[in-house]
Every structure is written in C-alpha cells, then in structure tokens.
Image (cartoon, rainbow, N blue to C red; front, side, top):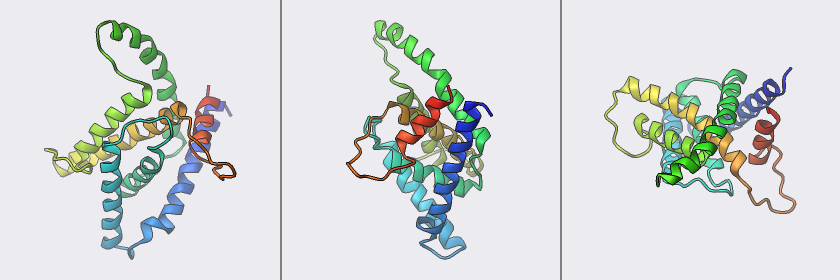
Length: 193
C-alpha cells in the first residue's frame, strides 16, 4: 500500500470514529426521528455560522467547529467519507501548494493577494455554506441546489481541514491527551508525500 493510500485510509478511519462518537453523544440529544434530524441540522447551521465568520488562524481555532460541521453535513446528506474521498482531498491540498506559493509574488507585484492554501479553501468553503443556506445568509438556490451546495461544502471543508492542519502550530497544554488532532492530521497529509 502506498503512503498516500495509507494516509487516506487512516483519515477515513479517524472520521468514522468521530462520526460514531457524535452519533452516540451530541447527535443523540433528541430521540430518533424528525426531532433528531432537526437537532443535527441546527448543529450544522450553528457551526456553519461560526465558521463563516471565523478567520483562518495558526492555533487551530477552526478545528472543533469544522469537524462538527463536516460530521453534521455528512449525517444530513447521508454520506460517508471513505478513503477515496480523503485521498482526493489530500492530493488536492498537496498539489495546490506550488501554484499558490508561486503565484503569491506575481500577484503581490500587482497589488493582489490570495492568501494561503487554507485561506483559499476557506473562501470556497464559506461560499458553499452560504449557497447551502446553512450559514445564516440568504440564498436564492432551490432545495435541490442547496443540497448539492452542502455536498460541495463537505468537499471544500475536507480540504480546508487538511490545509489548516498543515498551517497550524497549535498550543498543546503539557499533559494534554490529543492522539488524533490537528497535528496528527498534518502528519497524515505529510506522510502522503
């Protein structure tokens, strides 16, 4: 198995653990059925609004809401994020580094900035959340198109998560136990080459 496939498998397993833990805790605040689905949608919307207004930082401030939003969106959409999706996200994040880095100076000479990988993915993610109608801003899209936009937000959110992990230097308190956090995610992306 190649390093990139191994990383994709590890990220898929990690997210499945996240999803299972949330299904048994946060997503279980209401009984099965319409009340639970409404609660999950409210959590999705809450974290989408928090994320849409948050800047990309280097301390990992987006991590919690981003993971919760991704898990809730996947639950609403009825999708899982398998190794193929994580592999595509890792490859995209890795491949976009050079064009963004190389164009920064050229664009800077023209008085333009595009930001880091994470900032570019954050802009795309924010717009997809707005288009999906979950970020507290009006959308003109119909229900089917909002559903598709939510799926697009999952794709951009995965890339944002990976790029954010690579750009972060979170402060970890001595003795804190974080075995599969942003630093772990960054290690998975880095190990993929």
